[in-house]
Length: 307
Ligand SMILES: Nc1nc2c(ncn2[C@@H]2O[C@H](COP(=O)(O)OP(=O)(O)OP(=O)(O)O)[C@@H](O)[C@H]2O)c(=O)[nH]1
Image (cartoon, rainbow, N blue to C red):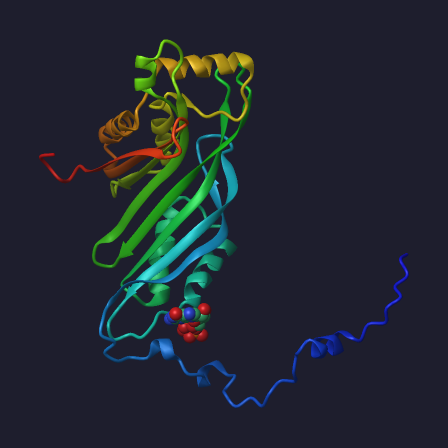
């Protein structure tokens, strides 16, 4: 054992040495009922507030899906809000995290839309408001196989889920993801004697789901990922042997894509899905021959005719 030579004062003494002082005289109530409740003050506070709540909340949540691994725990970022009326000074912030803990304890803090809808509706009840919104971003891991060797490894995308509950209009559900893909430049391929430059592209999709969407028969994560990857020049792979690398390289050369091509092709797939009411698709290519990125996006609402 190491022999210590210094003689240190007791811990409390050390704290005093570094500035800690004895507690002062307490005059304010310590019982909850006797405390001022500023946030529940009623008056004319000039404006209605659209959204008040908490953001950047980091919390584990469970993801179930059709792709392997079928169940995983990931670390999500939550934003939870509701509106408050002009007559109310403030929201009861602690109730947002109380609701999170309640769902965590009963093991219902999952990406299942049924759980999230129940969560959002209960949140509005807990807050005594007419609406509530939760906005979640969570990394989702999935097995990706090399196209020839079939060797697998974990890839990930960022899922986004936004659920709004309003007592008058009911639920609105948006789901999406941001997936990384390879794009090979069609222009470069066309003009060059050899080769073509390629880059990493990030395809971000947000969809508004039809209210009748049934997640028990349709895994939205799976079909959104398929849309992003199947329209790309090539997929991204964690494990590639030489036999795989040849397939990926040749596949990219045979499927060149501009950012415009990507957003149009993914939009076409989304347009064909009856359970998608509206969508936004963005592609951002981290250009390998520039320091800047290339971007394109399409926003489309099937309820708006004559486009
Ligand atoms: N409304 C409001 N609350 C804040 C703000 N900043 C911090 N708080 C939070 O106020 C919370 C405590 O208030 P409440 O949640 O109303 O606590 P409470 O009145 O004891 O809780 P209930 O019994 O549920 O009404 C703490 O969680 C603080 O984090 C703010 O800008 N606005």
